[in-house]
Length: 86
Image 1 (cartoon, rainbow, N blue to C red):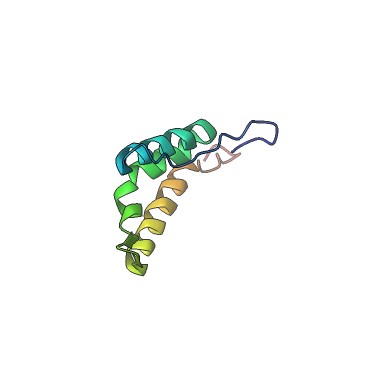
Image 2: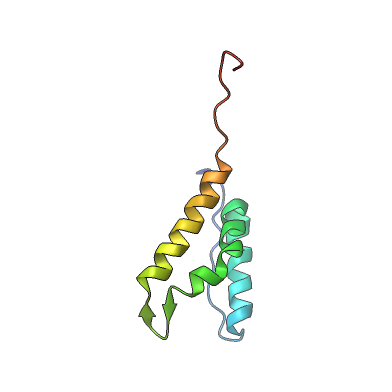
């Protein structure tokens, strides 16, 4: 989680770069601010890209992407350790 006093790194698409290069630059920028989120996005990039194809949104692809990200976020949460040692 980003702390309030940390500097936010901005991102802008670069017209001199191709799509793949801009995607890498975006993920690198996210990694500076939130390495865990960058890893989740990188691991699910194909599902994210499938959400919008030729200007049309695919709600099924969006649902699949959301599900994959939710699972990845759940995996980051450690269950509480019981106080009684059980």
